[in-house]
Length: 95
Image (cartoon, rainbow, N blue to C red; front, top):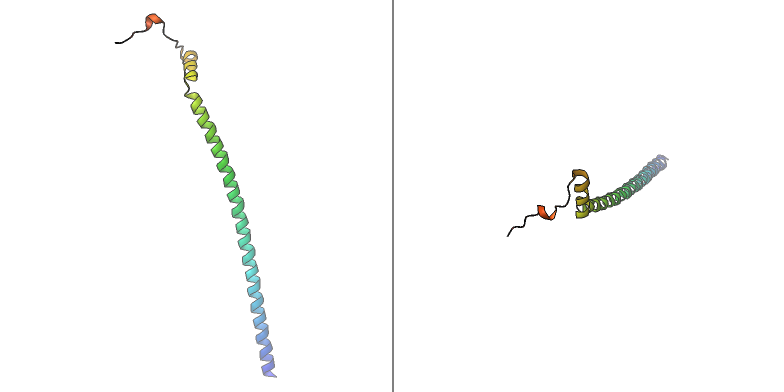
């Protein structure tokens, strides 16, 4: 009788241990998948930010090119600084 009780107690402890391990594995699985989903969302957001920054950079490069253009510089020099093209008699040609 004692050996039967001992065997059933061992079986019960074994089943409880297996249930505990199964629950632990399930919690670990859910935790890993949750973290992977969070990382996926973060990665997606960072990619979107990179695209926005690249677009902003492209616009800034276009603006720099415009601001360096001779037409813009000439127009600005005339309007803001009152400069004008020299008259022919103001020009000195060097040999």
